[in-house]
Amino acid sequence: MLDNARIEARIPTQDLGRARRWYAEKLGLEPAEERDGGLRYEGATGVFCLFTSAGASDGSFTQLGFYVDDIEATVAELRARGVVFEEYDGAVNGIMDIEGNYPSKGRGERAAWFRDSEGNMLGVAEIVR
Image 1 (cartoon, helix red, strand yellow):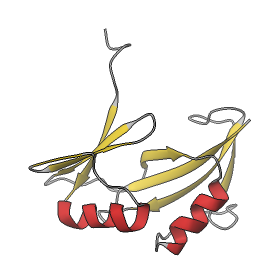
Image 2 (cartoon, one colour):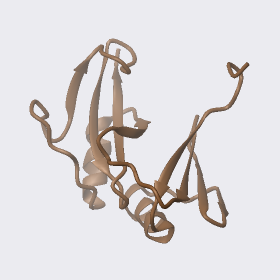
Image 3 (cartoon, one colour):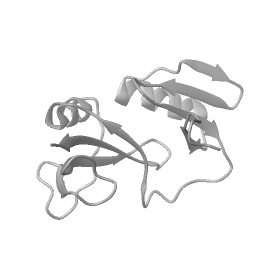
Image 4 (cartoon, one colour):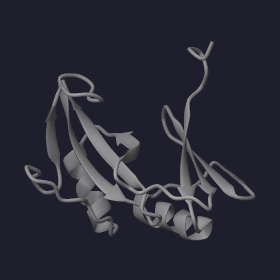
């Protein structure tokens, strides 16, 4: 029934204006659509929406991931924009090598994580083929 449905992610915000500024300044993203209480962002193959919510994620898991072709260049550019990356044991310059475990694609990934202005955990990853 849902195998042909388009899939979109929803990310809660307590302050939509603050989140919009953060996503623009730190990630270089502008919404494709804006409505009362929400913003819709469109990427090359996916969509996510920020919405005003009384609830919040605890930030203990990745809520949204961005696949990139060059993670080192992406992390460097995001750092230059003021994004602060999480530090984990085994990471080098904030980038972790992940061998084949779910949800990795290919034979693994190189990944790094950061939090948005609302405490949501976001990640960037490069597929290792």
